[in-house]
Length: 111
Length: 120
Image (cartoon, chains in turn yellow, green):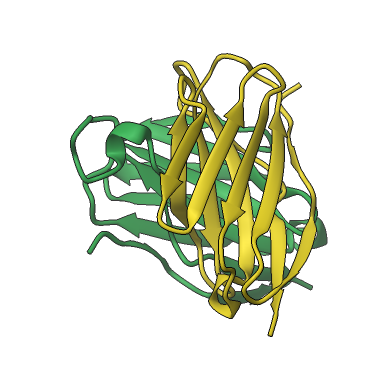
């Protein structure tokens, strides 16, 4: 199938690390993405990883890719209340125009 | 600053009405997309277009049609609105040309703010 799966909710305390997990099905995916959706807004690309990479770090964000298990994770260090949003995992396959999105994980950050 | 705009943030229509949702992008992108977003289901692709006058069905095209007469504009049409089409509708665009914009070679999609449609 085409599913990209992720848990629907995550709650963390301010200052802790958040880890959002995602599984995908197509091993031919070229790019894997994390998009962020803040309340009342459209999605915005947060970070991406190319399928031949294992890890990518960008300031407080760390993306880990386990291609064997088709597992992608996003770690947010020192989570702040401003990080409260819905995070979407997505995959782009070789060729074609479609990007397949997961259902989104709603991150709640408690002060 | 790149921008995708949608004609309305909120819309309320009655069952059976014809509904037009408009999307405009100012980035000269070739690709444009219409999604609907429902809780627990994420984004589902309704239609996309990779060029003017070209369109392809997505995963849930039933009950919808689209129009792309100009490169910057992609319209979603609900021929006869039904209550099960109450949803958040998101438009997005992306470039086919590497190097155009900072992230276009990674096929980043740029999203509009969404239109929340309620069909009564």
